[in-house]
Length: 385
Ligand SMILES: Cc1ncc(COP(=O)(O)O)c(C=O)c1O
Image 1 (cartoon, rainbow, N blue to C red):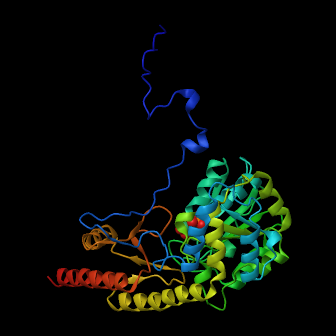
Image 2: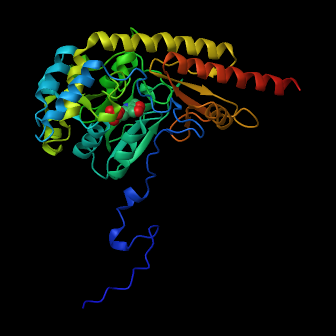
């Protein structure tokens, strides 16, 4: 009988040399997801991941259920019906759209297709953390461009372009702040960026924005083939759990992504639900209106209570607390959690001492206001002692 080998003495923390990932991967910290539980609450108010509180369109849910009958089939690898629906609703050429397993998969594919280990990738200070992680894992050097007034700054980015720069990543509106780059700034950035440098313009929250000086980037992408727009169904369309996003780009970029994407990266249920969701424009308008009303009401009310609330056009808002002593962001988070409200503390990748809170349902937003009113009263009482 064969003898078992003696158990290895190697621990999980110290992998055998042959199993150690490459240095660029070892240097990364895993992404930490927004919290989803609050002790003592079976159904806490989860406002930590910028999901849509109203959920998806009933038509998307019906399409999801219908897809159940076809689960034994592979999905349409060409994503034709969804690309056509996006093209119809956004007025875009469907042959210049590719869908992904969330927009973050598309950012990963763009990095894999265009960035080599010796390249530099410029990330605007508060761009989405996952894009940065993908570029670091690729072995690229990350160059951070500071934001001005918590917005991506064209001059700061342009000043950091070197012969090694291959990609620029920015999100507008950005996360965790929620502000956006003004059109004139974005145009200036595109005009002055060398044409071999890809600009990823992450519009995960673009569907919420009405500001007349916001640019969705589509027309610029038509003029400048190095501009790539990524969008998601995780926010306004309420399909975060299905993982579905899309990108709009020049045909040469689409061709590169088609060479490396796995043929069935978007599943049958996600394709069906997203197609129904994007076509249900009445429902999207309702979700957008709910967000606009509450974002404005929450910002005004919390500012009136003495909080520093950053300007946001997205589906969340960022509050800055005291840097130290009592009434810090950690204490506010604890206070909210004890009342069953889950905020998102912003540590790496955002301004210090802040909590990011998603706009929720009516009663959820009221709960935040009540809790923060109480927290402010404690603060006022402590200060008057
Ligand atoms: C700015 C930004 N981009 C992209 C994403 C990820 O979107 P998706 O769910 O499509 O991967 C998020 C998610 O929170 C985000 O905040």
